[in-house]
Length: 497
Image (cartoon, rainbow, N blue to C red; front, side, top):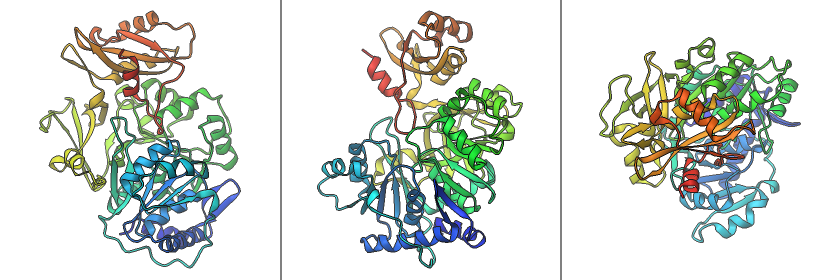
């Protein structure tokens, strides 16, 4: 089954209703389908054939959804990369994926051309020089094998060079079906605002939203501004915001309260752990509209979920969890020898099911390591709590080992984030001659009077002694990658001297 076939019912039922809009531009479901078919013919005219890759290095905009979906519709493989990456980083990805076609913004063309491997035979096209083709009478999507690649999602590279998680048509169909079954009940009456890059989570969430016949509105601003998002919600009666990172929820809380955003019934969030104080404050202000998901590029958006209703009146253990295991997904907690640990104990979160990637693109060694024993080894440390919910503690490589004790950075971050003078905090380990590693925290403060003794005193009152930071560093902002994740590795390298 071609993943694009999930849109067929919406095209029939909602032919004249809006599928995608951006500013004053909009396309009905009929025209969106016809444009995707026309793009498929254009791809073929450009020399693309089944299995070839099309790399998209473009910002959110009106053309993005059609290019994304048309690529898979045509039996090609879409390689969407974050528009905030440097062209040299994109050139590395292109050298690995070997796309037949690269669509990028004109401002990046010169540096891309000079950075791409000389052996790469790829056509480069500036998005500004191209208009979406006129819709044509749409035939059926290309015939594909369910296990054919459809989407290559390059990891953010926080531990080295990015790896291309290869998602098949089967993977993405399973992800979309599970989303509709568990995470969020998209409706044809919904107006969905996509505020995150369509190259990542919001692109995945286009599929179940389009399958249900909703209108998808593309947020095209270069940076996230909560006041502008709320303006759009009020102006356009937005009912769903998908997909936001926890840092965006914090920005929502910093914005002045609004009385004109009552149309909002769902905010889908994930991508990183959220601090308890932040999600509790968000639910108190906005109501139980927040729907959490836990997944990764290798199993997109589909490992566990915590629905909006579960946030209302929830205890701390529920709110800090990643929720319940998704339909059609198995999760086990394994030790370093891949043996299952008893309930309540910590280990690596390992996943099995049709949502799990086929493997890493042209990287059999990394694939064998990640998928050993038939289970995706996520690299995340977690446990099942007493209520059967999954608790994600930290990335395995982020665990601090001090005096032979394991310390999870999130435990420290959750405590310090509760301090009223702290905006952001990240914890990590630094080499220590006596203890092996010692805890260091980097803090972005809201209160200019906040200092290291005050942070350490707060930790002393709320943390076990061996978990307390030995060093507190204050920064104007934390280094983050193109997906908004804080780069612990960069901080470690910066401060280890």
